[in-house]
Image 1: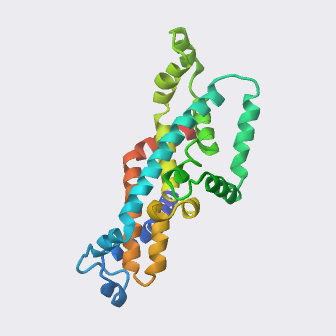
Image 2: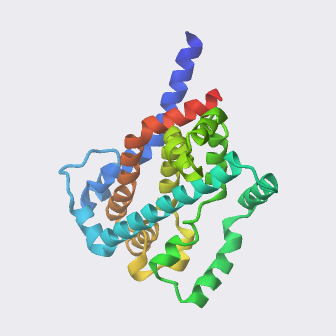
Image 3: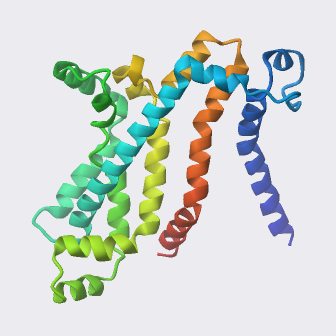
Length: 268
C-alpha cells in the first residue's frame, strides 16, 4: 500500500509540474495587461478578457495558424503514405540487400538536423523556392527514418499466415497492404500521426530559415511577438495558448489509439 501511495504521489507531482505552466499561460492570456502588471500571476482573471486573442490575430497570428495547419496536414499525409510503403517493403517483403539498405537508411538518424540545414537552404535557394509553401514541406514529406523504423517493427509482428492467406485468395501486394496490413495497424498509425503532427507543429529552425512574411508558421510568429512585445506577456501568452490548444484536442481525440499501440508494443 505504501509503495502504491508513493507511486501515485510521484505521478501527481509530475502531472502538476507538467500542467502548471499551461494553466498559468492560459490564465495570463485571459487577463488585462494592467491586472497582470499589478497582481500576482496566480490570481484568476478579473474580469476575463478576450482582447489578447483578438490582438494576436490582428498581428498576423491567424494566418500563421492557417499556414502551420496546412504544412502539418500535408507533411503528415505524405509521411504516412511513404512510410507505410517503405516499412512494408523493409518488413514484409524479401529482396537482395534489404537489411543492409534499411540499416544504412536508419543510420541517417544519427546526423544532427543542423548539419543538413545549409545544404537544404542552398538547394532551395538555387531552385528559387525559398519563402514558399514547398520549401516548408518538401524536406519532410517523404517519410523519415524514425517513422519507417516504427512501422517496420509493427508490421513484422503481423502473422505471416494472414498475408499468405491473402495471397492464396488472389490478392496482390497493394491489396494486402491496403486491406490487411493497414487495418491491423491503426493504433500505431494513429500514434505516428500524432508524433508527426506535434513535431511539425513545433518545428522552428527550418521554417525560420526557409519561410518568412506570408509563410510564417506559429513558432516563428510567436517568437516575433515575443521580440516586438516583450513587455506584453498577456499578448504572448494568448498566442502561445492558441498554438497549444489544437495539440491538446488532437491528443484527446487519438489518446485511445496511442495507448493501444503502447500496450501492444510493450506486450510484444
